[in-house]
Length: 205
Image 1 (spheres, helix red, strand yellow):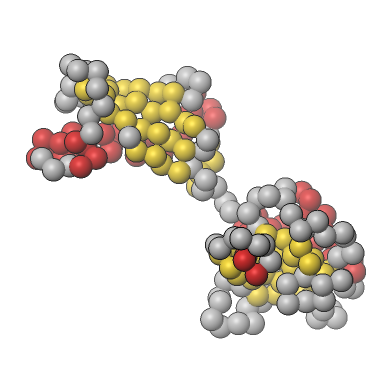
Image 2 (tube, rainbow, N blue to C red):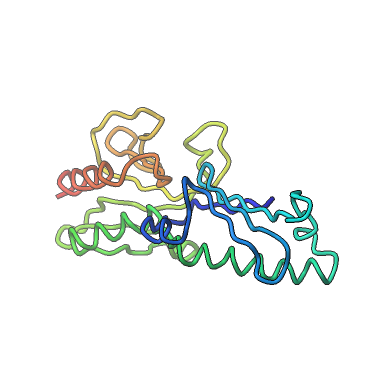
């Protein structure tokens, strides 16, 4: 069985149903070989397996691909899988990009890179008084979340909002009383972050 992570993909529901998925499941017989490709969406993963029509068992050799025959079968299996991914899903814009697009549309301010080693990070500030109201960084979040060891984008905003240390943390590399940190991992909805950005903008005018 193959597991394809869908975290970075958005489902096109119209095409999803049109394609033939029913209750998150779809199957298709291979044109040239006696196998059925079966797909199921579970917990934001696309699970795929190939069933031998004659035995009704899963054909595991397609994942090992140690024979010329299984390689040919895999080629057709892959074509079906890629067709599903192309027609039923689109690349989902990550939260960092959605936040930056909001700031551009709302204030016509763009990210300024101050650190050459991290070109996708920086600050956003007022055009008149040059005060920062948003800092974007990519850090190992074990610096703010205990027992976590992965890199995520964060934003730091001016705010007097209470920190719960679950979704809103004290300001990272800023005054911990007057600034907050948000991890851009979709744990906080975009709309909530937009309001916090607006507040940060006002507090730094």
